[in-house]
Length: 468
Image (cartoon, rainbow, N blue to C red; front, side, top):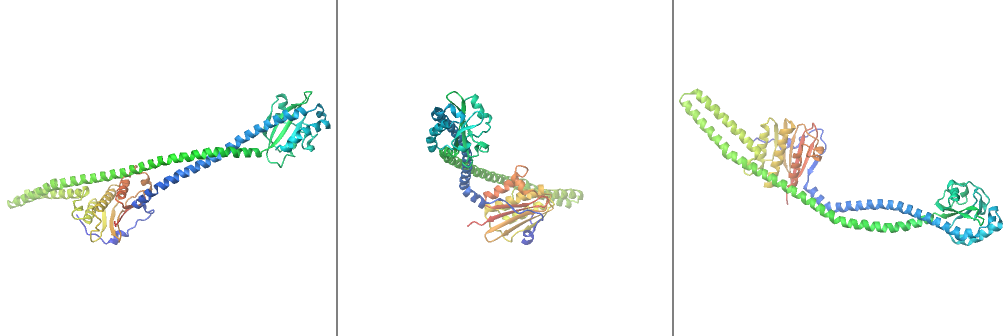
């Protein structure tokens, strides 16, 4: 059941065309680094998420604060116009102001002068219902006539105070341009004889910016403190969750190792039972039939001799098939003859399926230890099983190369191949064996890589580092 290995170069240098780069499916070094980086990654994710939320909340807060500040500033402008109209303008209105009486305009100017010199108002206007500006702190506007818009004319029929952001593109606002955005407030006032007039004020929009800043600072303090408190509460929860996930991963790996070990023990028991029972009994029966054939020959019964020797040959073939099956189930030579003999037996079982196998093995046992020997056997056995079942290959090879600080095992075939990257992303879709191979190597602290593509065959590379 063994064969002489070819030179190591034959297997080590064999290449397959059209293959993508090696894909590492298991690496203890990478997993250790990943475990070490897990806390930092968790903190980075939480910190980044908190920063994104803070930026989004800040942007939304700025818009909300500005809108709220604008509404409040508009209300303040309306209240200021109301107060000024009731307390200052209306008590000093004379009936003759409608006729642009200088005395009436002078009295109104004196009444508003002190207030305008100390307030932030940019402009004050007093309109007649026909759109004539009867008085303004800008003398060039007095006497000019402009068309009142619908909202301004409505306050005469429905007396109320209205305020809004002013449209400075209108002709009557040409002297207000250059002062930035302005808030406009207007309401009706009445002369002593009951003639309605329109009183209008213009306030600087900077009040909106000031108020928005005040609102945002108060809002930001609450928001940032709440967000920081939320992050502080979430970190222990996420840390605990991450610890449980890692513990579940380790438990899964331990269960996998126990399942594989249990499977190996069961294979060993079945192989031992077959070897010590059926195989020995068939071997004894073969010797008995051969002896009976010799005795029949001495009696001259050639027909009986032919039948008995045929039966003995059938028994020997059955014993050979059973021994091949025993190697598939569990090679007894793994603990007795060593790893290299087991690999030769595995190659022989593959040849029995009419697949040509090249073995490139070292002259002496690499001395990897019992655990590593079992890992190499399991990986090679699984790969050979996949070659036999799925690859449709006619040629396969196995090489073991021992370096100064590592041993590299490569298994390859010229079969149909597969999309390794897609199979590893979706192991449940017919490629669960790939995940098993990766977990076996990972649990033993070895690196396993695959090189395959549809129609380009497949190669596996197992790298075992020497332990200090």
